[in-house]
Image (tube, rainbow, N blue to C red; front, side, top):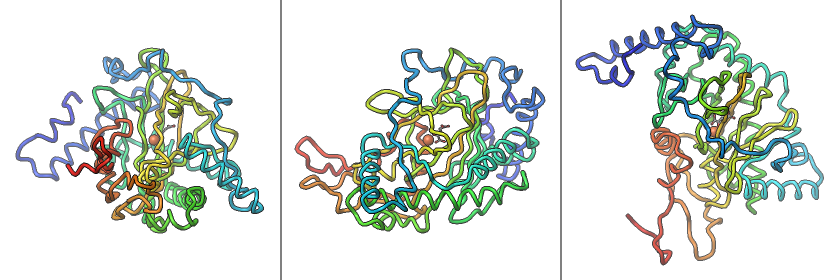
Length: 389
Ligand SMILES: O=C(O)CCC(=O)C(=O)O
Ligand SMILES: [Fe+2]
C-alpha cells in the first residue's frame, strides 16, 4: 500500500504481464483495506484514509456558489420540440438556441426516459462501486482513459496535488458494448437499454440544436457523423463529506470532451455550472435531465455555442450520485466547424481534429477548465491574420 503506483510503472526488467499482476495485487490490497473499514468504499472513518484527507481539495468560502431552484437555468420541453405544432416548435428551437448561447446548459423535461430505468441504471452502478468484492473491480482500477471500462477514485489518485471526493465508473457503450463487467449480472442489459434511450434523446437534441444554428436539422449530425457516434456511460459517487472545510471538490472545474452530456442525480445537489463568471448550483425540476454542452459542440458550431465549465461540490452527510450519458463523434471522425458558420470576414475558429486525438489530449492534460480546446483553436495575431505556428 505504501508503494506509490507511479513507482510500479518504473520497476525495471518486469515483463508487462508480471507488471499487470503486481498492479492488480496492489489494487486488491488497497480496496480490501478500505472495504474492511465499512460498507462504503470510503467511509469517513476509513483508517486507510488517515493522513490523506488533508490532501483533499476544499472549496474556499468565497467561492461556494449560489443558485438552487431560482437560478434561471433554461428549461427545454422535449415533447414540444418533437411533437409541438409548428409555431410552438419554432419557439422551442429559438429558446434552445438561447440556452446554448447563454448557458451551454439546460434542463430537459418530458424526455420520455422512464424513471424506473433511470433508477435501475443508477442502482446497478452503485452496487458495482460499493458492493462488489474488490477482486471484481481491481482490473478496472488501473485502466486508462482509452480503455473501455474504468473505475477510479480520487481517494487513491492525486491530480495536480489534490484528491477529489469521488469514485467513478466509466464504460464505453456505443458503437459496441465490447466489454462490460460480469457483475452485477444485470449491468449489461440495464446499461444497454439506458444507453439506447439516452442516445436517441441526445441525437434528437442534436437535430434541434442544428436548426437553432440556422442549419438543416441533419447538418450537425452529418458533420460529426453522429449516426455512428461514440457514447460513454459514467456513474459518479461522492461519499458523505468529511474533508477539510464545509465544502469540498468532488470534481474540479472542467468542460466535457464530447458533444453533449446528459446527467441526472440521486436527489442530492452538487453540480455547479459557470454562468456569467460565477458558479451556479444546479437544482433540477422533478424528473428532469441536465444537458451540458461539450467541447465538440464548441468546435462544430465554430465557437457560437461554447462548452460549459462545470464542477461537482460535496458537503454534508448524504452521499451523492450522478449518472452521465455522453455522446461524441466516432473516435476516428475529424471534427471541424460547419463551414456555413464562419462569420463574415472572420473565418473558422477551429481547425479539424480527430476526436480520438482530442480525447487523449484532454484526458492526459488533467482537468484544467477547458484549456484543452486550445489545441484545436486557430491562433490569430493582433491584425486577425492566422498564426501558423
Ligand atoms: O457529478 C456531477 O454532477 C458532475 C459529473 C461530471 O461533470 C462528469 O462526470 O463529467
Ligand atoms: Fe463533466
